[in-house]
Image (tube, rainbow, N blue to C red; front, side):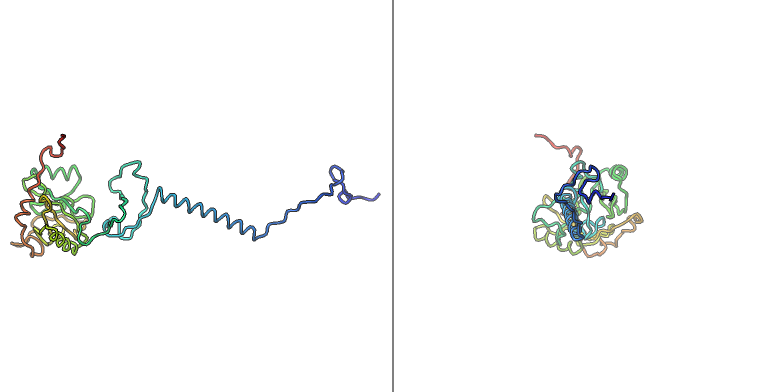
Length: 287
């Protein structure tokens, strides 16, 4: 008896039922071009999602900034880039030493200007009780004496600037002056011209101090406020050796390194003792 192949006979080999004569679906294999197109689309979608997420993070949480000038030297240099956490201070206050970036109003210019101050350089205070004031700044606040040129004591804190506070042993509890840092020596000279043009004549300077090696010019502002413009302040590190009055002693008739400036005006000598600090003066009187 001849052998018959069930498939050839049109019979299902499992059920022995006749096979349906209907059409048979055949899946064609994918071509390499189709696979490449699919991969390209997937990568485009992934990249688009990543870019969108990056823009979202940049707009809400983080942003990069570059430093346009020398106003933050030595901590940050010109053209440095910093990544700023825009949400950090929504949950806590800034800590000492942290760099805080502020949003400036439209049209404002934060770059150095050739005839205007960039920041406070130091504050000079006259002391009634010098010993108590000295202990307060050194033992309580952590300053250290960096130079002495009696009656002035120069106090240094955690910075590269020569001094941030100057204590004057005058027997008076008054403000001696506030010093504003200018971008450079030329800016001090231009600032002097600007002050003169606005009705504030030079009361002392220009000159160059001994301690701090800084250029100076002094003025009396509104209400006789004693003001100094300064630049080229000496930058120091832990290796700096403090010096005493004998080191800074100038020849007779000279009040600075150059020896070209006139002595302080009588007006400036007076206003350096004008603004007093009184007991309880920090309290605001209520109506």
